[in-house]
Length: 117
Length: 113
Image 1 (tube, each protein chain N blue to C red):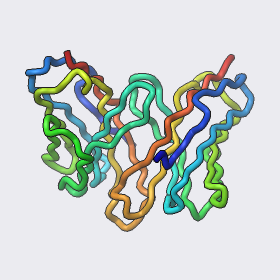
Image 2: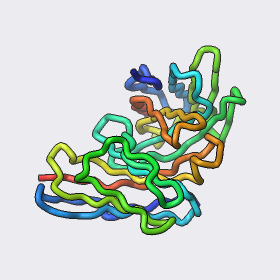
Image 3: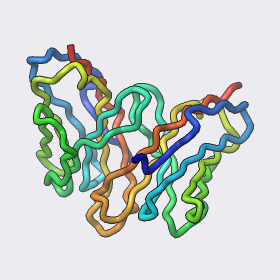
Image 4: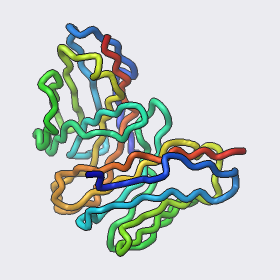
């Protein structure tokens, strides 16, 4: 089973709202990722968690706040977003990138389509 | 600097024929390559991967070829089916790169019945 689930599927929010995106995997993966994807563009990495610790922040604005409550869950808290933040937000997981091997395939969830009004 | 390039934005193929999607890379440190398929408004689906110690990997209708000297890889789909119509992304990574995948810009494949 290589399933990563994401909720909600769609989200519409105003610029003053606070909302959260949720990602879950039960494959025992220890690395989890948040990506942002705009139409007709490749996914852009935002954050990497390895063993529940934030390993990489790709200079993402602070209005995006990730959280990894446990090894199966990854949240992305959103606050005071801008209309240009509207995109498909993808979660992915892999066994780990920290094993000394680069052969870790990332499995993606279906994404959350976010619209900021 | 785009380290992974898919120079063909689109490709149209007749059902039953072969689809060949190409990808070039510039960073010789890349040692793992992946192909993902993506339908609109869905997450990318992993298709097939290849390690730099191999030059070919096959899985059903999908075969990936790697030419390290040319820094080129290709995905062959045989036979192509209408359900294969999607955007295909090539991605690359290397040990020590913090798990970061470098994606190409994608190629839209349309398989005509």
